[in-house]
Length: 99
Image 1 (cartoon, one colour):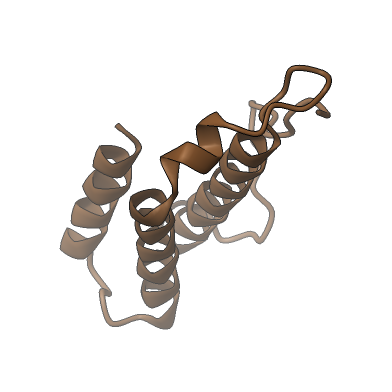
Image 2 (cartoon, one colour; image 1 turned 180 degrees about the vertical axis):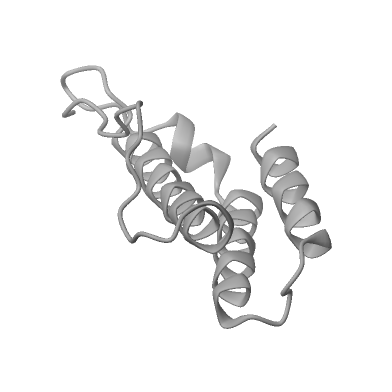
């Protein structure tokens, strides 16, 4: 489902105006990075290595990195199409609890 989400966003971005804009290229590069990370992740690593606290640190790190990457995509899309200011204010916290 993560691959579907990333590819679906990329398909929408490909249809948007200004597809040669450097900002658009940055968005599409980040989406490609997310897609590549998801496709190349080792599922054995994600499902294993449980810490003493019962947490999967590799899975946690992978998801944290993916969330940050998609947040960057969100900010770039917002700056490109919806806002003329630099800061984006969100209603959802993306900080994961400590492991």
